[in-house]
Image 1 (spheres, helix red, strand yellow):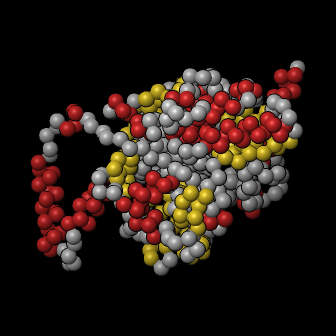
Image 2 (tube, one colour):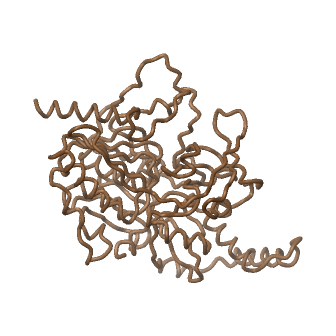
Length: 465
């Protein structure tokens, strides 16, 4: 865990039944520790504490009051800092292995209700048709208004096989509706791959886990072997990938970049929060004794024409990959503007089985861009016909839509050598796109994937000339 001991995590929000990456670290800021405590504010806190203990309509334990105060401090900072009780902390530890219990839905809190950031592919939430931007206002018979996000997530967790009813508000739907789901053990397949046709490969990463880099290496070897030679082009699909382990993002970037190329750097108030991570085994292997699995990746992968597909659900660790490949001009980024989460969270154990998830740094692409509350702008804009704004019921949720999000500290920093407005327009048909169902990622009806394949073929023709 050498890198995890310093690198933090770049996961997104809280996940009902799916956990994100973690890092154990002790943060000590001598300057902060030396600052005198605010006596007047602490006196007011003590008075409120005492008043609740003596006058509240029902007895309240000291433990509950102090725990709620800790949670309130963290919730008031930004959307990604949070208090983790014993259950949440334990699930976070298990989460990076790719097997979890619950619904498979990533959520945040907005205006007192739970907002869906993204359902995880191949999970009960995804199969039930829950969409990004949905508001969950009721869990079974209990209204969410007034609950903390942790409490709401707890209620959505449960024994695999048990049923749960979520009441949903969705944009352009006239009234709330219910969705019944069955909780399950969520086994997220991090990497999926196949040959689209002779010479052209497709790799989809659904989430960055401990084994993502190794699974990618295996997938790339398999594609070249099935193709019986080097590929002519490759599509890397990061759509609706909510992020995960920073080591996974560095490993994936390293598979396509020259050794020691800068992948990402971070800046924060403490020395531990300042890092420069390069395409080097030291920055993605868990220990010195681990074998460098990327050594087995065919050399042709370093130069194969590469297109990266992104959308509004591409967040955090997946944005690091897209930004690194874009800045190094290693890939064409195609799709829609990404989510825009450019902050790093560190998980700190509190010693009693609980912990806190604290935002400790901002991360930047190799070219010095902050994508916080902005996202990665694709080189070629290609919107999915089923999710564009033509009376569509799908709402594109991004970091900038979350309450208390960090501002972008480099709003004027431009992408390296960005040229013009490259847009592939939707086909001009009389079809009502509001009734189109989103195609399964990687299927024959996947419009964005088909456009990526067409571009790869065009690039092959130009290279031949």
